Length: 507
Image (cartoon, rainbow, N blue to C red; front, side, top):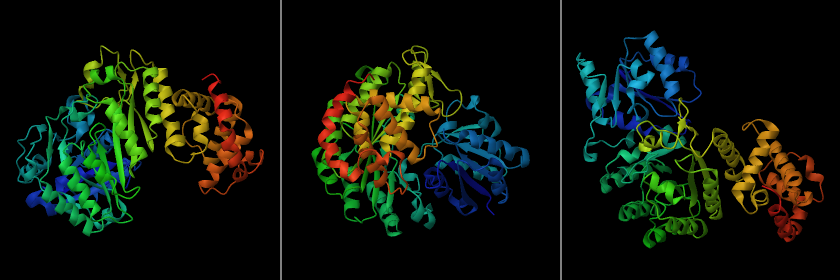
């Protein structure tokens, strides 16, 4: 039994909530009375409530995010009906702004906005002493980082062996990209490097090998970046995996040299391009040297051993389908391992809201508040991009179609894949639940009947991809022409002729 429970609903089991662990680490005298209870999306609110109530808590604190606010609201509503005596405290990015408009904030006894390490423990101490003088909405105290106790010993052995280990070498961001809540930060604040490296060492000694840095700007200060990379290089093992978010136009030679010392696949870089359109970048206060970013991405993909994931956002103010498509083609030409096509979301508090009237930006009223239309992108346009993104994950990002994908895209990748996306949705009316065999079949039909590529070439590519996946079934078109392994050499010689045919097909 615990007096205080810290809880949240994670997107998946492998995501261990760093925020909850920070709060518990900073509970002071109440640490041993505080318990973590994490759930995942898909758990029934009534079942979560039953498990929480079984601990007979006095206080429950919930971490609320854009992906879990609806489920957390239902959970809090049930708790308030069944056990109104329990004090409910909510915090997190989703409830840090526009509190008055949110049902979960009205249901909760207290809302802590912003940083919570100091304010949550103070509020709990007051409540347990019988004092209830705090206002309903409490602005969280932003303590100096040196005064915040690191949370890493809160990771359990199960976390170490089965979940992602999230760490941060800094907080905040100096950049002002208006779609992001970090635009509200005044700067980035680094943790003391020696202490942080000692904490990484303790995690490593406990067996942690999968580290995900949540820093917005890992390569902002190169000397710090190098020190962290050297730490991992000195402890390199076959199962080490480290994820960083990189600024795309800041990759000096000494950082490149350190990256080159890692084995293939040990580093994973997430790079936010978001848009290549200079006018859109200026409109959303995004500072980015496109030429330098492009050169760095090319180097990362062609020369470095790192895995590269790059983000694009559709629906930014003033960017239409044509501009977004050009940006996708520019990015695809650099061949990152993954292109994440995102749809703009209106994060509560983010400065992007200032464009709502001028650019007729309409958002879904429900989480995750995705853009529905703008003055240059209709609702139908946005829906097409949503389907494009889903099918791109299935075909482009999955890595299952290295032979078929070049045939599918040829030149003008965005135009060709959008054509495929529109066609596939028109045939099926759905974007999910595609078995691999079915997906292979649709790719084959599209390439042979819509694009007009010779069946033998398509069969060779699609069947080889299917067999390389480890699947043991038999595709209906395997009998077309010759077997994939025999056709591969012939297909390579004839591909140029068929690419010409693709280019001449209306897109």
